[in-house]
Length: 455
Ligand code: ADP
Ligand code: MG
Image 1 (cartoon, protein in one colour):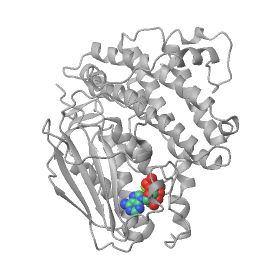
Image 2 (image 1 turned 90 degrees about the vertical axis):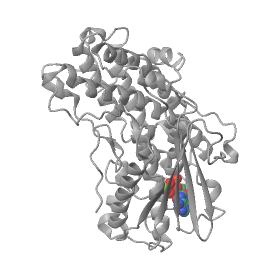
Image 3 (image 1 turned 60 degrees about the horizontal axis):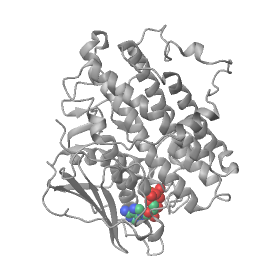
Image 4 (image 1 turned 60 degrees about the vertical axis):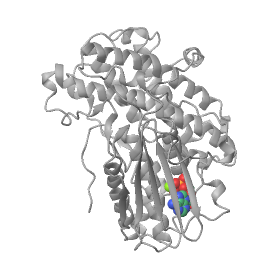
């Protein structure tokens, strides 16, 4: 069986999309708390433990501020070598200046959903997660992080924030499924599209600082050894300036094949052709998310169409820098033309080299009546009780319910794979297009623009 290589500590586990950060408390002595020093006196009234301490006023004030539109220059400017504690502090302060506004805006958007929807236990859990995360950041506002001790504690807060929101997608999916009588699919898609795109940016901001913390900590904190992972010279925070799409896609395919073997007892084959030696600057965890979702779809279709002798063909085509038009143009679907792409990021360089990845399967394509729905959140043709019954024991381990409760990974079923992959691709100016030859198979084109030259 192929194994996913253990690369950097910022690599998500594609199975759960959980980031595997080591606990930041390893840099802390046990007596230190995560809150800044003035935290204890900041609250006038005692609150029961676990209760988020954020007033409506604070939320309204923060939510009314403009959301800083993120640029890659912002993300990389603190991480260029040589790493210094000053750069780390300014990264922390920059992170602190962005996150509370973003969280407050999401809290308001959740509040604006119909009351019966926000009252759903799953949606309410997400709402409370946001309140909780905002409450952990508020005590840090109006102060400047200017020493290592504060930076370490702040990084712990960020790591907790990232972990708190790990399971947002399956939980929201379950919540909206339970509320489908009270809110229309276009309303859900409108909410989710903004919500999940903003979430990509919010996590990126937090993860970038956490990654910078870990890559610089060993330089000035000798007690931090052994380092969580051998230093990766091509990384700036979560960005790999020499990312190999072939290596990532290959490891994701291995992972998806493992799921297929578990669920169906079949392990489809894949080949990688084109120019697999291509590298470009991109965020590995974003490509891992997208590749895993697209490959799940291709593998599932291949198995259901009983074509497992035919390999899935993955073609890597580099997009040269500033050399005319891209090799593949991705037309956004008709209903999307002119749509506002919230929170997309400004590139460092419009002419950065990128890559197009085509995934070609012999999975029978997509029926014409199904095709218009595939980009909607929660549309799926997957059904656990379909003609590929899993044995009773694995049903729960692989099903939607257990993934919503934080359990295993499933081959399909949420109906979020395509729309969310497209949101990730578009975040840095790329896109996804799908061509179906019904009765034969599907080609998916994933175009990613590199994040640009980072010096
Ligand atoms: P899910 O996989 O959970 O159903 P997705 O958003 O990933 O959700 O896909 C939505 C639907 O699009 C799938 O249920 C399937 O019907 C169709 N689809 C996507 N990719 C393919 C493919 N490569 N071959 C056939 N059908 C596909
Ligand atoms: Mg899918």
